[in-house]
Image 1: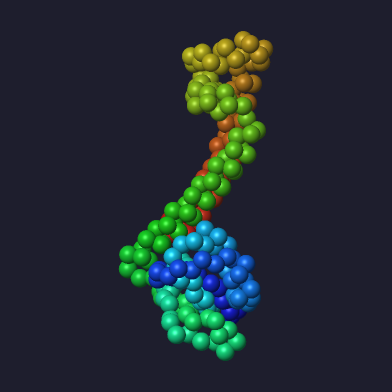
Image 2: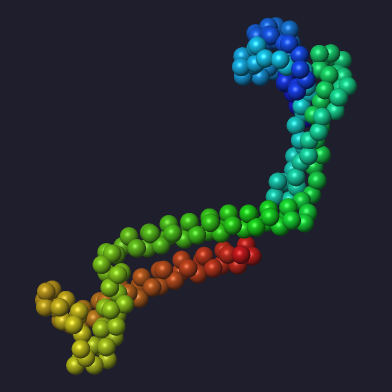
Length: 200
């Protein structure tokens, strides 16, 4: 693991007016805080700390705890006197349940977003007015194809304006509506399968 040495402020009280440049000269191998100039004239103590970072871990199943070890020494870095150390622990109890709930919510959101995009692509082949009136169109188309004397005010108006026969229009409506229903149903089925595979 790559070693990292840096300077940081402690909460001890001591007059320490020093510039960032002066620290870089004094400790050329230690990283210095970028916001140091904000503390030039404050009372504080600046210490050099070794921070090697946590080992690799899965945040979905584990957490990392950090604590400071004092009286740390490294012959190559005599100016470093303290060190941050890390310990990885498995999530348990409420923490694990909370993390699992968050993961499930995020996965459900991703699946729902994918569904919206797929449905948008399906709807792109149809006009909004068609989709909005399909329930009524299909109701009248089914009624007319079953009985040519059925009352079908929307189909009558469509035939009058388009010049097509009600039989042609009724069959066209059924074909388009069934095609849309099949495409939308496939999308909804994929969503259900994804949720089931994720245990949602």
